[in-house]
Image (tube, rainbow, N blue to C red; front, side, top):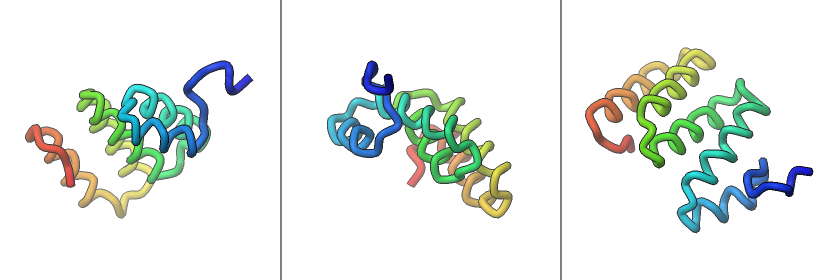
Length: 92
């Protein structure tokens, strides 16, 4: 059933899409990963990056805010990332 689509929670497929520059497919996989494990801060941040890469800055910011809720110790770094996005820069 999972392979009836090209959006599957599979790291090998994810990496192939990243290398190929298929950002919409990368976003789809990160959405699946976060749905499967919503409390994983790294997955939430990767989803934020995927949103950013497809030009969905508002959703990227919302996902970073979610990461801060998961781990309040991430607040300083998360606020920095949000400020970079709001300033129109790609966070580093």
